Image (cartoon, rainbow, N blue to C red; front, side, top):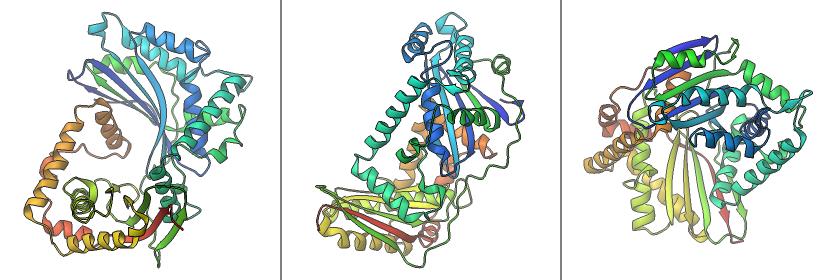
Length: 416
């Protein structure tokens, strides 16, 4: 059930008895820039750890413990060209708690979002410094994973230097030096006053009661520009290539392709099935032929990003096999274009995708995330996904495969 709380502030309630817990997602959306991702990530960390009523992380944790161990946390994400700050909460429903726990959790959410630890127009200094250092350590630790590092380097190759798509949603360490307890306050104010706000509630709840509860949050109406998540990039004339040497035992060869398939467009389900056949499932060409039969890769997978028209391949290989692996990957694509796959292979991939989709309904966060996209992008709810996946033909797969264009390759090697 949908409610409009104010201009640019929407509430969607999904009543269900499937879960013993109630779940809340509050999503703040704005276009990502080259500088706002780090600031918004740091802001999320500050908001979830301190408020005026609960000025320390310990005090906030004690309050959550009083609420039957409720969880309230914040993080960041992206939907194509859009940056999101997300508050998530989960807690037992009122029938089990035997009290008005929902109202108490929303009161805490009100405190977190509207009463951060800001005095004299700046965040609390010690808290700011602790969270800035924590974020720096968190970002640096991500890059200790060499496959993660290789994938980020591939993104830098694939996207133009001035593109915001190069900047991950969690930000970058270099931005932290420019952030202060003072200049983060306008970032907070813009998020609260200007961002598109979507509130989603899932659980054994009464929609009208939920409407009345969230209507009390002091969100003001805002003018929201048309949000454009989809990113389109011209093709390069030549494949962008880079090789880097580090002391790694296992080399990483990653490839980036352009694939003009976007979320819920006419080729979306054909794109999902193609990716499943190429490298996205255990029944794929990359898994079967590159990893298993040729034994040229410790792993080889593909992933479709349907808001940026990007398909990436990640592999772990022996450095001396890089040329062979790339050649064999090319051969798998040519085989898909030529229709060299069986009806059984197609059916196995379709069954795998359908099972994944159905299994995702066992998790509240997946349901909320899917509903958020439909609401945010103003799309109709997905009907009969299994039928749409099964309707994809071999010819559809061939047609989509022919659209795939290699744009960038990055090799992280331990050999010189």
